[in-house]
Amino acid sequence: CRSALRLGASDVHLIYRRSYAQMPAEEDEKVEALREGTHLLALNQPVEYLEDGSGNLKGIRLCRTTLGTPDASGRRRPLAVPGSEWTLDLQVVVEAIGNKPVDDAREWYPTVAVREGGLIKTLSAAGRTSNPAMFAGGDIVRGPGLVVQAVQDGKAAAAAILSHLARKRGSTSKERVAR
Image 1: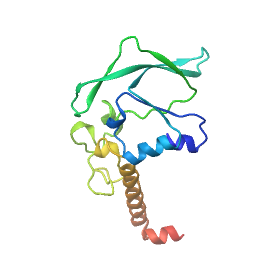
Image 2 (image 1 turned 30 degrees about the vertical axis):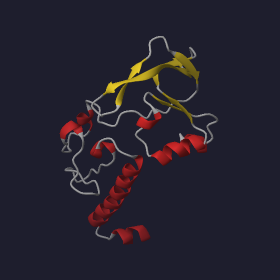
Image 3 (image 1 turned 45 degrees about the vertical axis):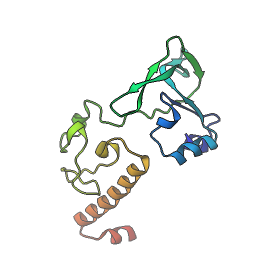
Image 4 (image 1 turned 180 degrees about the horizontal axis):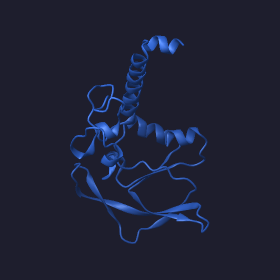
């Protein structure tokens, strides 16, 4: 949301089906997003994207939610409120959903060892996998996590990849960078 605002979006709405307190984000990130102008639509759930007849996005249909009993995560499960549907006009949607591999993800990387739940197994903190040519990090390795962890994984993997390529070419990573 904050990036969209900084890139010039005139209006940004964060739609979340649970409450503010249940959002899996750092408190300071939530506060800063609101301070920078994000509109929080908590206890609302997307139902359908709406188009203008020419294939262009024109809005999203939402329904209000209420919180029921806790689910497997320990957070109270959002339940749709019957008859509460409403429409929000918009032109762009950025989805931020799902923090686990999709069911057929294993087919996308058949040469890499995985652990329970389809998460990629790494052999080092730098994200080296059982396939020496592949590195992985973020949610596909850790499961649901913070963006900062995925960025950290990416930086560690980038350094390891640079080192790996330098060894293959017979020079050190510092020599490669200097060239």
